[in-house]
Image (cartoon, rainbow, N blue to C red):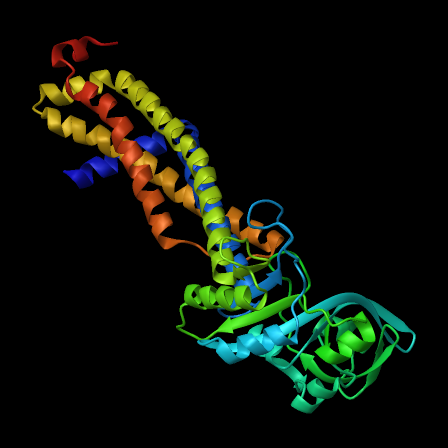
Length: 403
């Protein structure tokens, strides 16, 4: 019986192709918009997560805070960190794989007649571990180069391409501002960061060389702490805060003169924000599904009116009410599912074009696709029930007299 109802439904759709297409538009637009929004949103979330993960695994960043005036905070100096702070962290902090002090400054690097604006970072060899940098060529700083403040440097791919392409910079000498520097390493590319910055546009020098010859001071503006795999970053963060409060002589009840940020929290916040926005946009797009359902109800009511005499004949020769009900429900279901399939294909096609333009991953969500398909069917059944019931309850005598 269901198969016969399905064949009759397909025949009815083919008999009124244009009307059926117009009826499907609401479902197609609704499903297509939801699929496109969710796919683009998932791709954006994955890109943000990947970009932030490139900054380092289980990474914590520590920076000096700002002065707080008021109870408990007056007179606190938000001074930069020093070597004593780094030594204290390295001796007492547990559950970490790297602790790297860093300071940076914008500078121009020069090789021959070429120059390039970049950011110079002064740090030590643990910086590469903390930030998950790998080397395409060359090596990191040796302990002797870090202690002596040798004029050695490691550069990113963007700097290499701007000054040395198609050759490699390793083994060559360039100028960083007014300082000559031997290039000892080339970093593997990371690409664009989550905040739109070019992570490969960087020059990294031993901290002492940077302080003496570039910055002209001994300030350490940032400390990067990479927790071990499986370590509780919240516990590590709490231990950092405790050590820094002791070193910086922050008394009980006083505000911290530093800030500790957990990269995993930033990833979680940005991911949840992206997911929320995607959900809101999808909910707005989902309103089109209701409009499509109303369109199906309208066209089914028209169909019942047009086929009143046909329904009367079927009832008169012995068709049961439930059979007529099933026939019209199946017709509504077929219309809705056709709209759902076309909408899914349209949504995936739009998302595919959008991700190419936005340079984000194409991440179709099978569960959302299945849900959209089932929901479009539910819309068809829900909005098709009233016209189907109306058809099933027609009086055969009145229906046969209908012109």
